[in-house]
Each structure stands twice: as structure tokens, then as C-alpha cells.
Amino acid sequence: MIHWHRTARDPFNQDYAFATSQNSGADHTPIGFYYNQGGESITLTRSGTGRYTAHWPGMENVGSGGGAVMVSIASGFGHCKPELWDDSLARIRCFDETGAPFDTVYNVLFWKPREGSEGVAYAFADRPSEASYQPSSFYSHNPAGGDVMVSRTGVGQYEVTWAGYGATVQFAGGLTGHPQVSAYGTSSDYCNTGSMLVDGDTIRVHCFDSSGNPVDTRFVALYVKADRTMRGIAYAWAHLPNIAEYDPLSAYSANATWEAITLSRSGFGDYHYLFEDLGRSGLEGLFAHRQISVRGNVPVMCTRFGMLLNKNESGGVRCGNSSGTLVDTTYDLLLLKPTLTPEPGTAPMLIAGCLLLRALRRKRDRDGPMQTKGVCVDAE
Image (cartoon, rainbow, N blue to C red; front, side):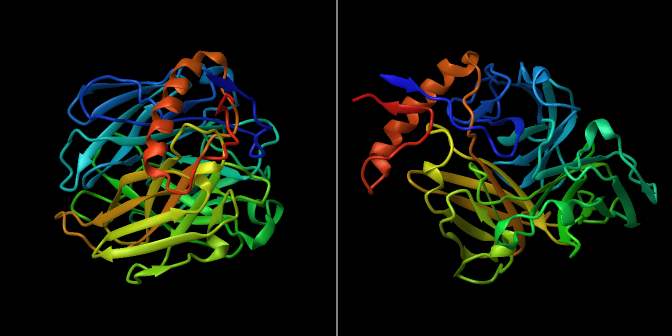
């Protein structure tokens, strides 16, 4: 039997939907790999080579503003990006490392704030050739309440500033925060994260065409900061690309369980991560959602591969250049585990996910039965 429990209010005070596609062809609902605070099942459809649509009905009834959509590739070399979005869907384009459209699996995240939300800032930078401008307030959010500004510092080089974010949104442990970025539109351009300025307000973004040349293009930027009360979120900056194993810098990493984070390298561009006990955080029965961005002014792309969920959350990252050659690079990794039970419309699919992943855990978790804290737990 499955029991449903509503967890405590999400300290991020956010509403979001996410999905990881499970195949690159057929239309499907990704059992165990999606979450929709809007309360309905998410469906993923394909309309052509490398062209997809994620539908998340109900999200128009939660949160505020137009939100932000992030997309990252989940198999093979290349990149994926949002083509457009609204409250109920996002259209997605995927390209291989040469810039040609191709079918692949992907991760898509739609994030909307509620009134009084903190810890998440974002902006849709839609005027790539302008020197400096304020992006649409409907598609931007600054928890500090200040202006949002996008500045172009060179071809394909940008800075995004959320005024006051660093000063007014300060969290325990001296956490600096975590950036993610997705290029936007129908071209094969892609973008990487850059450094975060010491004021805590600003991140840099670097964009490239399919040949690796800097290019002016549109993008969506996300800047996340976590504290000790925020369950269900984890992130890390993998800043030592040539080291066999290390702990990431604490100022640029977070784990909802406040346990260890371990990053490792097994070969050129071949990496692994482990967030200890994160499998116990948030709702049981769901894999954490993952977004990956390359960090730095380098024409390199990264994809995630393999995921293992027991008491920990772990998996792999592979990074390569436009010729498909594995190369060492720094990258940013974001993981989300929902902490709120959605409305009943998603219950049947989440139950199926719980049952599926519980069966996997019985095979994989060598540490004994899970002490679950989420929405589905075994009856006595």
C-alpha cells in the first residue's frame, strides 16, 4: 500500500516543473523522472528531428510571472535549448556537436517564483546585440527586488546583474551561489556559465556558434543560492578538472542533507559525482532533476550519463568539443528533489514511479531499507 504525506512548505517558496525524457522518439510520460507542481501529468512529444515539446498543464495556475526554462542534453554530445515557452509548455531544440539537429534525451526545467520567494534569480536575455538593457520583468526575477540588467562586454560575452541579490540574499555557510544557463531560440548556438563576481549580484555568460566561435545570441540565466533550511536542492562547481577525486569548494556547493559531496575523474572529460544522503531528501520515488552547464569561456559541451538512486544521488558527466573528443573542463551541476506533494492529478504517475524506483532500490541499496521522509512510504 502507498500512503501520501504532504511535506512541509518548500523554503524556496517556488513552483516548478521538470522532466527527463526516457527516449528520443516516441511521445511519452517519463515515469519516475518528472514533477509538476501544477498537479497534472507531464507529457513529452516529438515533432521532428531534434524537436520536442514538454507539456506541463496546471502550471498556469501557480507561481507568478512568465518563469524561466532551462534545458540540458542527457545523452550524447551536443546541446539542447528552449525555442519558446509559456505557462503550459516549452518547445525544445537539440543539436549534435556539429550543430546538426538530432534526436536525443534531455532534461527540461520550468521555474516560477511565488510572492516573497528567495534564493532563485533568473533572467531572459533576449537582446543579444545591445550594450546594456533591462530584460522583460515578466521573464525575470530578482528576490532582492532590485533591477535586473544584462550587459554585453564583447562578442558572445555577457554579464547578468540582479541588483542587491548578493547583499540581501545571504545564506548560512558563506554560500556564494550557483549559476546555470541555456541558449534560446532555433539556431545551434549554445552558452556556458562564467565566473560569479564578488558582489554576489552578477554572473558572466559565454556563448558560441556550432564551430566554437563567440557569437551574440539569446539565453536564459539562472542564479541559485541555498541555505540550511532549503530541502531538496544540491549543487556543485566542479573546479578541478584534472584531479582524480576531491571535495568541491564549500562556498560554491550545497547539499540539502548537509552531507559530503564528492567529485571524481576517471579519464579525459569523464567525471562522476556523489551527493551523500540526497536520495533521502525531498519526495521519495523520484530521481533528482539534473541541469549541467560548462563553466568558462571555452567551446565545450557536457552531458550527463547514468544515474543511481539509493541513499545517495550519483551519476556521471562527459564533456567534449565540437569534434566529439573528450576534454577536461570545469562545469556546474544542479540537482533538484521536490519537497511538496503536487495536487492529486499527478498521484497515479508518482505512485508508479515510487513502485518502480522502490524495486530498483531493493536491488541497488546495499545499506539496507530506506528510511524515507517523502510522500510514499511502505505501510506496516
